[in-house]
Length: 360
Image (spheres, rainbow, N blue to C red):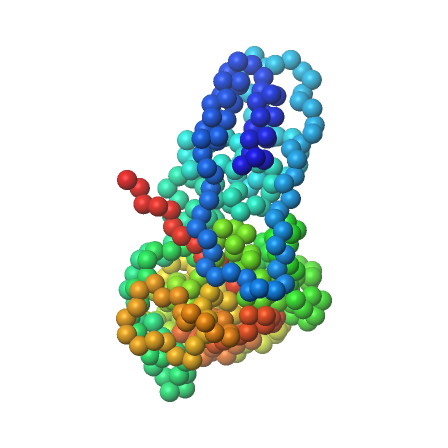
C-alpha cells in the first residue's frame, strides 16, 4: 500500500491543469480508503526447511524521469503511454468505473496486480482462470486394477476457480525473478523445460510440491484440492476423460501411446478438443499436476463436503498423467502419491482460487 500511495502522490505532483489535479485527488482518496486486493490464504504451506525463498518481490521505486517540459495542455490529459519502465499488469493508479481494484504501483507481476479485472469477473484472481460452479458428483472409480481410486463416493463442493492452463515456464520465471520462488530442479537435463530454448509456453516441470505451493501463494492463490481437481476435469456426468468417454487420440491429449516422439511436453492449450466441461485444458496428459492433499491408498467411504484429504501423510497427490503416460494413466480418476521434495520432467501444476463474492 505504501508503494501505491507514493506512486500516486508523484502522479498528482505531475498533474497539469485544474481538471487533472481534481481528478487525481479524487483517485487518491479512493485508493487511501481501500484496503487493497487481499484474498484468502493458500491451502497448505511449504514444509519447514524446504528450498523456497521467503523473500518478497522488490518494491522498485517509481520512474525518476522528469515530466514533459512543455506548457500544460489546454484540454484533457494526454492519452499517451506512461514513462517507460515496468508497470503492473493492469494498474494505472486509477480506479475506473468497470474495475473492482487497481494496483497502481510500478511492480510488474506481483500478486495483487493480476487481480484487477472488470467488475463482475467470476474468477478475480487471473484472466486465465475458469469458474467451476458448486456441484455434487461421484468421485473415484471401482476397479480391481486401481484400488487407490476406490471407493466411489459422493462429494459436494462449493464453487471455486481453477487455472485454465498448467503454469508455464514464463509465468514461473516471473516468480523466480521476483525472488518469491526458487528455480526448478533438473535444469539443463533432457526433458526439463526451464532452461530449454523455445519452451516459455510449455508447462514448467521439475518443481516440487513445495515450490508449486509457493508459486500459487505468490499470486494469492493455492493448489486445488484433489476433489476440486477431479470435478474440474470430469464434471458431474462420470466421464472417463475430460472430453468424455471417447478413446484418447493424438488430437485430444499429449500422452505417450499416441505421441512417442519427441519425448517432451507440448505448449499449454495445444489440445482444445480435449477441454474439460468447465473449460480447463490439458487435464489429461502433458504433466502430472500437484494437488494440495496428502496421499492415502483409499478414499474415505461415504459422502463428504469440501474434502481436503488426510490430515497427515508422507506423500502428496499428483493427478492427470503426463506426456509419458499410458491411456489408463490419463483417466480423470487416476492418482498417485509423490514425496513433497520429488521432482520430475513430467511433474507440473496449476493453481486454484476462490470466486468473486456474490453481489447483493
